[in-house]
Amino acid sequence: MMRALNNFLKTLILLALIIPVTVSGVDAIPVTGIEFQVDNLISDPVAYVPESEQNAALPAETTSSAALQKFVEKVTDGQAGAIRGIYADNIMEFPVVQQPSSQPGYVSEQQDVVTEFAMAKKYGVTGILAHNFLAGKVFFDLKLNDLIQVVYGDGSTQTYQIVEVLQYQALSPDSPTSSFTDLDNGETLSATQLFKKVYAGSAHLTLQTCIQVGSEDSWGRLFLIAEPVV
Image 1 (cartoon, one colour):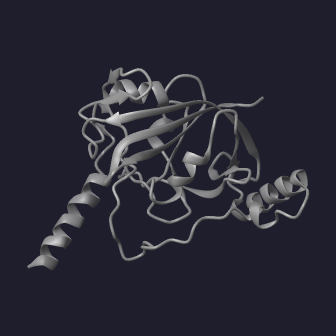
Image 2 (image 1 turned 90 degrees about the horizontal axis):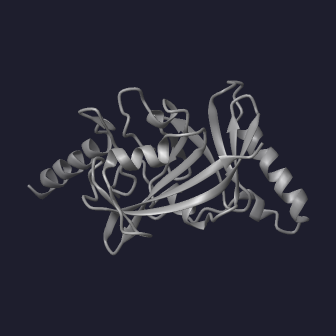
């Protein structure tokens, strides 16, 4: 009986994760903090260590350049215009996967993989999603003015610089159409208003994960806004 109940609850959580991101014409914010157990998920993951840190004995400039080039070679597949990786020196070097066409709320469950947000792409914005108990935990190590490299399938890169760090409380934590309260000024925004704030406008990069408070994995949302460096 308990096994059946647990399986039922897991199914409900999975359904919540793949609920369409646009509900009745409303742009919604994916949930990136519901922790659940699946067969291929490492329950006690080893802390992520970028390869650049493994070469700490080398001069900083050499280490950075070599680590980035090695990562570019690892994710390159010849597809120009397709995002295949995201890199920040000494912080992260993650492959990027795309959402299935029928699952606009999909977020990868793999340990060191992030997901491109298809809905943001329609607005000319590069959106990167990750669960806060997987790759998204590294987003909290990024700060204003940090540089991020977006790597494309043909080996080309685009540099972005973080210009804004936004944090919101989700008033309905597990809902992609929740209203959100700005932790900086107390302003409350609808899901559509927040979506337009972080995923619309001029071309830029937005990284998103959830903020955990206590036992609530999806208590809030963290957004890192980065502008292209020309």
